[in-house]
Length: 87
Image 1: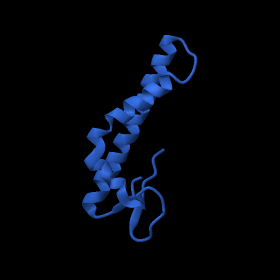
Image 2 (image 1 turned 180 degrees about the vertical axis):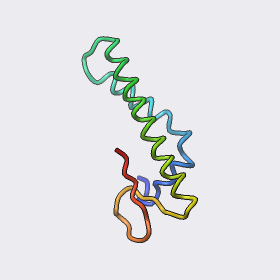
Image 3 (image 1 turned 90 degrees about the horizontal axis):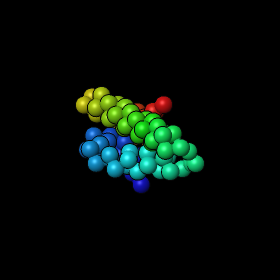
Image 4 (image 1 turned 180 degrees about the horizontal axis):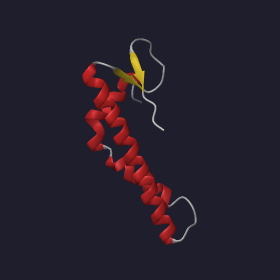
């Protein structure tokens, strides 16, 4: 697992995460009994949401890291860190 203060690693790893997006989207497509069109619509929706989350996370990291702000996932480690909250 990634350490709490590893949230900024998204800047180094983002390009490698497309397989995760596609895996999650394919799983959603195959999750329930739907028509082929409904399943594909769900796959595309989940894929878009996953990409948006990763892009938002990257943007937060890009804005924080140059100014010296450390990012973390939760309030697990003390010190001057900014918690990453994606909605």
